[in-house]
Image 1 (cartoon, rainbow, N blue to C red):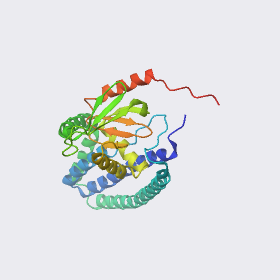
Image 2 (cartoon, one colour; image 1 turned 135 degrees about the vertical axis):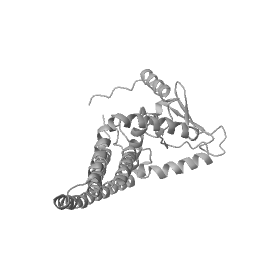
Image 3 (cartoon, rainbow, N blue to C red; image 1 turned 120 degrees about the vertical axis):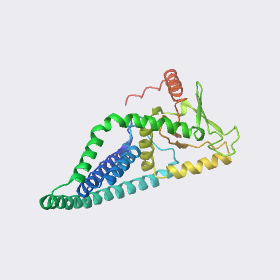
Image 4 (cartoon, helix red, strand yellow; image 1 turned 90 degrees about the horizontal axis):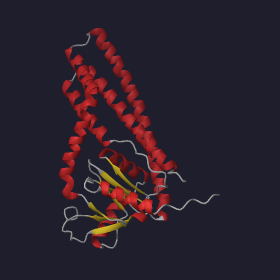
Length: 293
């Protein structure tokens, strides 16, 4: 069985490195806020940190099947060059930033020592410290309910703008909906057969965001090609798009194959039915055994 290759693994490693760098930045800024004793800025830092944690997610693992973005063969070399150029640039920026932040943190520590030596710490400094402590200690209690509430509200708000799926025994039909494609007729639909797919998976919103972010790194042309193909599809409904990323916060459904990559949000009404139908089709159409070499 082939694996996903070093490119996707490098994207995953770079994304984890980025997440740790962001945490490092937050820690350095938090130390500065503690030194200054600014409670208002501490609250702002907490809010910004939670926003970053929501939007910056690790890359979820792919299945064991070979992953290759749906792109013509002649695009593969430029995509690979763009990917590694972006990765090298990103890692260099993170390394440079980490060095600068480390120097800044060392200066902050010296300043903190001087302040304590000369003036001591007052109530504002301890208030900031207590605020950060309460945030970190209570976070496991409220972060999950908050994310669920955000997910439900976001799903309700974006529902009219998202595509939906009609599940059949041999595949699914994607309905782009009138609200998503303005002045769209009822015929703005296209079908995907289960025989075309390597994977059908249900994801939560945060996992979907991390997945799609990594796909943009793995194939830097994916966003531009998606917009172009959607425009082509609107002009000519026979030109089914090969890429579709409708990312929200709630449940998402991934449909992935050699020629299609669809990640559709607001999937609660159809995700389970689609996955069940896909599994039933797979059971009825097992893959041929790999010949022994």
